[in-house]
Length: 260
View 1 (cartoon, rainbow, N blue to C red):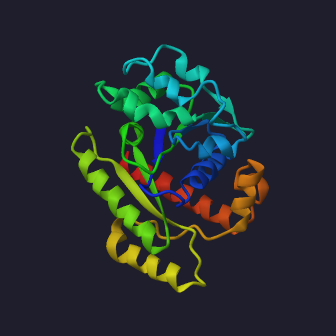
View 2 (view 1 turned 180 degrees about the vertical axis):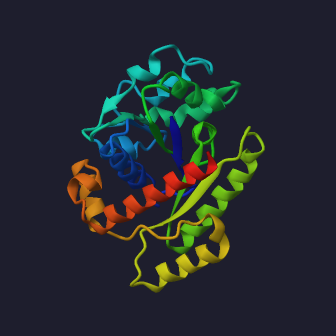
């Protein structure tokens, strides 16, 4: 099983779109894929027409057992997505209370890792959508991941969010048994605007060694896919957005192979 976390300490940079698009393409290729919603806002769950405010069971259930994960519980939380080969472990808004409820409990940073161990033979890939705040949920995602994908919108304020994320990675690096590989992915790129062009240049100057060679463009078809609850490959396989995510998937898999 390969575990990828899609993370950035800023919202609105394309994390959920990246999770869905890559998962859909992996499923299309015949892989068994699990997507996990670790964000209390539940954007990934909402993508598939689930309501995080009314769901009875979710990722939240994993954290209700003092750091252990009861046998078979992770499998009971899975939902269908309508995308071939892809299942979802959804979020509920109750996740927002987690930090307060478990702040005094030890061993809570590895709950998701323990849950995924139970599903190890059931999936080829796991993609984790993360919250934009540093806390127990983001720590769980980073601890479980072998690879981080860091979407960053090509605009100035998003670059500041990336700086915070890089600081977080430095903090957690020492607690891992092996290095955490990552790839920074420029998103929402519009070559017609000076703001996008300047932001992309700044990314290349600062993060050249860890930056994806291309960028995900602004594409209204990605928004259309979200509205329909589909992967972009299902809605418009010839769109610019789909072609870009195919290229990104190839790059992430090459990175994964190089570090194996």
